Image (tube, rainbow, N blue to C red; front, side, top):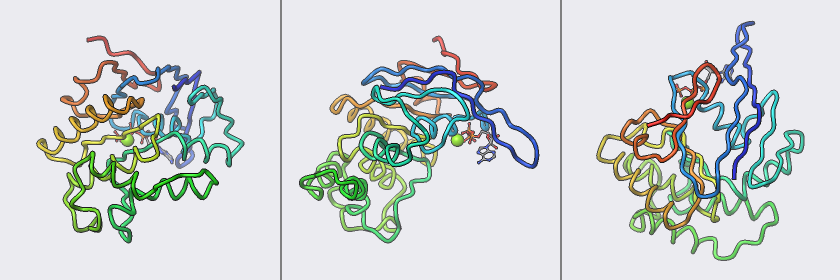
Length: 227
Ligand SMILES: Nc1ncnc2c1ncn2[C@@H]1O[C@H](COP(=O)(O)OP(=O)(O)OP(=O)(O)O)[C@@H](O)[C@H]1O
Ligand SMILES: [Mg+2]
């Protein structure tokens, strides 16, 4: 589902080069769950953003669902991202002026703008909101729901449109322990049901220990964590 080959990324900040990724290789099979762990600043979000084709590597090759990503073809990248990839961020980025149902419908509206024919947009969004236990909050605005509910809405938004690849950057980072457990259970149950590939960046030990395949980012290199 995901293949990275010799990925490099350097940032230049105040004249200084920061070598964040120094030759990353990674293969993630369809339906696998993996974690990316590592110290703050080690480049986890940078790596996830490259996998999500939000950010471009300086060097190296990337395949998503067997499609080789050409970073110079912006339109094609936008299409692949819209069709295949769902994002769950620590800071939820729900749009404040849209209600929860509309927030979850948004990725489908975007797909439709790209001339993908999608039936029953509202029905699909409602079904997912039902799966995450938010049927009673459809017409609430993000400011009117709790942190745990926002996290669940973000999960629904990431999955809508039958996404094959879900990228989660610290999905439990903003939650108390009880809500963290609920989100982890929710993600696990949904993954069993829908069989998407899941890449989770996390500092959360409880979450990381549940993950079958774990990697650590250190000095710009990815190492397998052996239990
Ligand atoms: N746009 C940017 N310009 C310059 N430097 C950047 C940029 N984005 C990230 N960096 C630097 O790259 C390094 C890796 O950042 P990244 O956000 O990937 O780390 P992280 O592992 O996700 O950290 P955290 O756990 O704190 O979220 C950091 O040193 C950061 O300052
Ligand atoms: Mg980060």
